[in-house]
Structures are given as structure tokens and as C-alpha cells.
Amino acid sequence: EPELLIVRDEPTIDSSFEVGNVDMTASAPRDPRPEERYALLQEYISMRDWERSYDLYAQETTDRVPFGVY
View 1 (tube, rainbow, N blue to C red):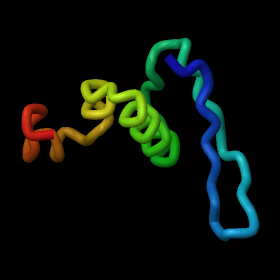
View 2: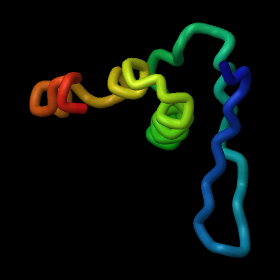
View 3: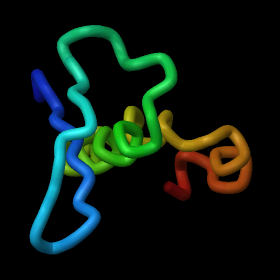
View 4: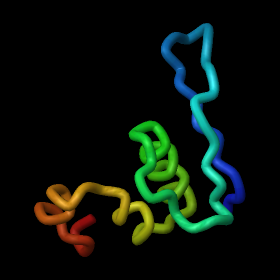
């Protein structure tokens, strides 16, 4: 289980800057920013935690793609 997720924005190859941290020992963030949502999605997929990664998608997406297909 990860404890801290650091979200970085990488606008160019030569630079990056930190845009926020997500404490993953606390409950899931209520409304993560898009970059946090994407970083969490990548982390959950890396962990093979398909249910938590699926839960990050918008309702419109989950309506179109059932969990079994995902």
C-alpha cells in the first residue's frame, strides 16, 4: 500500500514542478484535482487494484463500460 503520492506536472522535458501531495493513508480524497485523479489511477493500476482504479472514473464512463469489461 502506498503512503504518499506526489503529483507532478511536467510541461516540458526539461522541467517539472510539484502540484500537490495525496496522503493515501487517509480516506480517499473527496474531489481530487484531475492531475491527482490521474496519478491515483496510475498508482492503483500499478498495484493491480482494479476496483479502486475503476471507482475513479466518472459515472458516465462506468455506465458505458461495466466493471467486468474493464
